[in-house]
Image 1 (cartoon, one colour):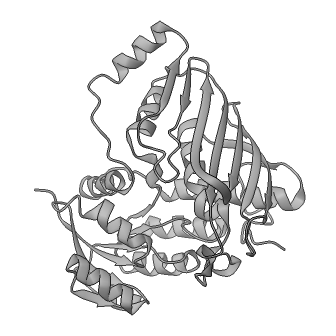
Image 2 (tube, helix red, strand yellow):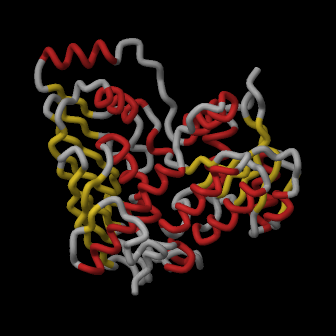
Length: 356
């Protein structure tokens, strides 16, 4: 019987999805033990819905619960750094929604805190999970895809003024960014998960769809470390919503499904260059075991890592790479110049990517 970990959820917006998709499917691994939310009506409703008796509006109460093993942070982004730091200092394991923190400087501080912490920190990148993306990962890692040529990454969603009626949304101080930070960050993580790290980026951002502070349109040209070229396109003004990743390799074309919020699931388009490559791919994927999408698989792998002391499925280094892309995007758009990677303390945006 696996070691059952007691979980406290902080923030019950996306936190409810963590409950339904991530924890309830694994009753032999997790016990939902406490809820925390500033919205008392929502707190009581979700507590009653799932039969969770311990409910509080104070994060300090959760920190002081000795039996809690995992604190899952699903709050607005601006307070992630403070909550992560407190939870790690209290010896808790931590799960945290994207964006992990509000700057590369904060990300590097968290990486240092982890080195002496008893608990472990797993950022959320649930789009990595599903049969489609994991089959693509296996094909690429096995070397069957061959030389990477080019990729396109499109996050074309829609957000209306009603979405931004929530006070913290659309503002630099609380949401920390726009489409790059809140929506397309997932597919951009999937791009680097499959195509490898970035060498350089030239990007532009604009606010064209809604009357908000942050960007809602973005585009970029990327050079990957492996020499492949990639383009990014993101908007919150698309009447038809899609998330689409299309990658051209020497031996195969790989294209995700177009589901905006579950691009990792099948069916993915996998087109081999020849019958021989097709047979090799079929042999590689023979006996495939299904990979449940999104939080269900990520939380299972998190539990396995905690019990075995093995590698985490998603790390703070992964989250930093996603924020490095965002930082480079804002810097390039502001300076109208290409940004080289890695992005570190020499960057004017290292401590904050907010506009000057």
